[in-house]
Image (cartoon, rainbow, N blue to C red; front, side, top):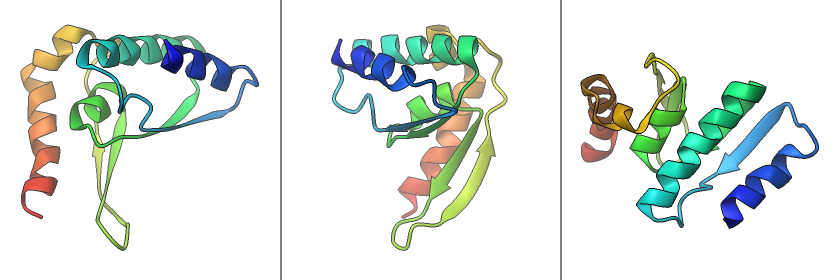
Length: 113
């Protein structure tokens, strides 16, 4: 509930860009899924640009049209991956072969470190 209030508060001044730094990190899995769907719904209605920082590969692939992977210190962009999954994305998307392939591709950056 606090995350929803935070998102609503962030939208009040009608910013052109939403900056979201790990907004779902402290949530349980079901709450995270619900808020991912809610954020997607808001994005579909308002079409705001969103810079979403997350350590969750699934969150990144589910929510993004483009994922930027950063290296450890010094932080540099080491890959830009276009996410061409159809929208709107649903919870069934999480089990889709294309979704899982994108997650696996990104996971390789972290397992070879």
